[in-house]
Image (cartoon, rainbow, N blue to C red):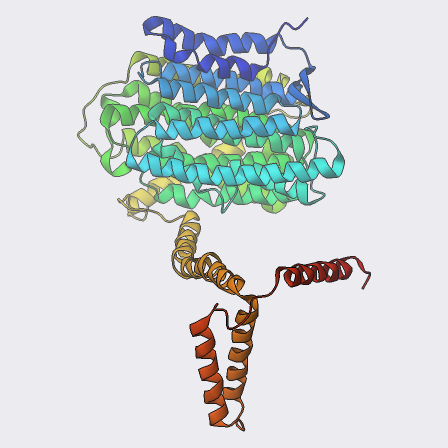
Length: 605
C-alpha cells in the first residue's frame, strides 16, 4: 500500500488550487503545503517508488537516497520560508509560479530516470520565467524573454543528449553517467546551462534582479541547486568540473565589486559560491561531495537571507543601488542585523553556516593536491567578504547617510528573515545534524579546529583591512550609475548580426528563390506544357543563337535569321503551325524515362 506521494505532486497540484482560495484560508493553505510536503518526505522510505511503464521504459517518479533527501529537505524548508516572506503579497500568479517552480525542482531531485527528469527540468523554466514576468516591468519582460531563450536552448541540449544516450545504452536510468560519448557531453552541457557556467552565466545576473521581491528569493534557491544536484549524481569526479568551478569562484569577484545594483551583486556572488560546489563535485572524493552537498544546503539559506534583506530594502525604499542607499540601520535595525548574519555566513565566518561547508571543500582540494585550485578558492573566500560580507551591508545600511527614513518591512518578512538567520547561526555552531544527513559519513573532518578558525580569520581580517584602506585612500571603485558589460554582450551583438543577415541578404535571397520556384518555374512549366514540341524548338533555337554570339566565325545574317525565327515561333506559340505531341507519344516518353530512372537506381554501378 502506497502511503506517500511524489513530493513534486503536492506542490504542483496544490498550486492549481491557489486561485480559488481567499483571505486567511489562502494564507494558511500556502504555509501548509510545504509542511505537508515535508511530512510526506520524512515518511518516504529509501528506494524507488511510483514506477510507470512507458514505451518499454520504466519511468521512476521517486527515487530516494541520501543525496536526494538532503536537497529534498532544504527545498521544502526554503519553500516555507519564501512563502512566509511573501505571504502579504496579493498576486496569485506569483504564488502559483513559486509552487510550480519549487515542485518541479523537487521532481528533478527525486526523478529516477532521464525522461522524468527532463519533464520536470522544463517545468522549472516555466515557473521561473513567470516569477520574472510577475514584476510587470519592461525590464522584467525583456529579462524573462532572454532567460527563456537560454534555458530552452539548454533544454534542447539535454533532450538531444538523452535521446542519444538512451539509444546507445538502451537505458534511461538516472545515475552515474560520466563523459564517454556525444550524448553524455550534451547532457553535461544541458546541466551546465542551469549551473551558470562561465560564458553562459549571464542569464543569472540579468534575470534574478528583475524578478519580484519574493521571486528573487525563490529563484536563488532552485535552478542552480538542482543543477548542482544532477551534476553530483551524474558526473562526480569529472576533472573538467574542477577547473570550471575554479573559474566560477574567481571571475564574478570583479563584477560584484563594481556593480551598483545590490541584487546584481548578490547574483554574481551566487555564481561565485556555485564555483565551490562545482569544484567539490569535480574532485569526486567522499569529503568533497559531502562538502558540495553541505555547501548547497547552507548556501540556499544564507543567499535567500541576503536576497530577503535586499528585497526588504527595495520594498521599503523603492531603491536598490549603492548610490541611492546608506544610513538605513537607523530605521531598519533588524533588517540590518539579518543582513550582517547573512554576510557573515557567506563570508565563512567561524560559527556561521558557510564556514562549516566551505572549509570542507577547501580541505578536500588540499588533500587532493590541487594546489592551484586551493589557492583560487582561498583567494575567492577572501574576496567574498570584501564584496558581499562588507560591501552589501555597508552601502545599504551604513556608509553615507542617504537621508531615507523608512521603517521595518511587514512582520511576516521579518519572521522569515529571522528563521533563516537563526538557522545560519545554528548550523554554524552545531553542524552535526547537517553532517549526519550528508551522502557519506563525515568521519575525518572537524571544521572548528584551531587551524581552520585561525586561517579563516586571517583571510577575513585581511579583507576587512583591504576594504578599509581602499575606502580611506579613495582607491575603491566608485559606485556609479552604469551598465557593466558581461559575456552576454557578445551573443547579443552576435544575435544582432545574425538578425541583420536574416533580414537582409538571406531575406532577399529567399524572396528571389521564392519567385523562381513559386512563380517563374510553374509559369515556365505551364507555358512549356501547352506545346512541348514547339517549346523545345524555341529553346533549341535560343541555345543556337547564344552559341552563335560566342562564336566569332558565325555569319551575322545567319544570326539575324535565327533571331527572326525565334520571334516568329514565339508569336504563333502555341498555335497549330507547330504540331503538338500526340498523347501516345507523351505516354511512351514518360514510360521510357521511368524505366531508365529505375535501371540507374537499382543497377549496381
